[in-house]
Length: 182
Image (cartoon, rainbow, N blue to C red; front, side):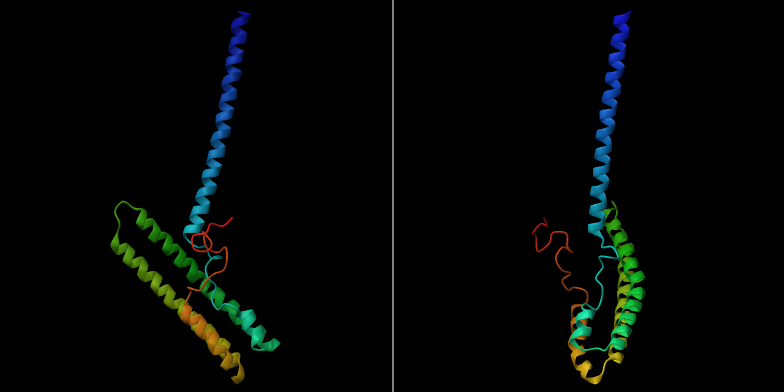
């Protein structure tokens, strides 16, 4: 009888140990899986923080064009107002892009839904372009005639590249053209 009790105790301890090991392994796998999914989803659709901010180089522009302190403060204010005005537009574009991605993942693709989503994105981008022009007009009105001559190349750079300017090292998933980031 003592031998049976000892055998049962060892068997129960063994089962508990194996169960704890399995739970630990499952927890590790789930945590890694969630981290991987979070990383992939963040790389797929840019977040608001990753979305390109318009009007690159305001600080450099203000320094190069010798804006006085009053002009600099007003430009900062208009820049902040501009960013506040386009932030919801960028967020909505990101949401629509996520819906487009979801449409691609469906078994049956709804081309009418894709068309509608693309039109909505186009309208939001048109609104962003209008906000950009209002912002540039605000900056233009703050400049002296001498500063205006220097502003035109800045404006041309913004409007010519229209969001496709390089975002700098580390902004893209694989760094420079296929090289993986360390």
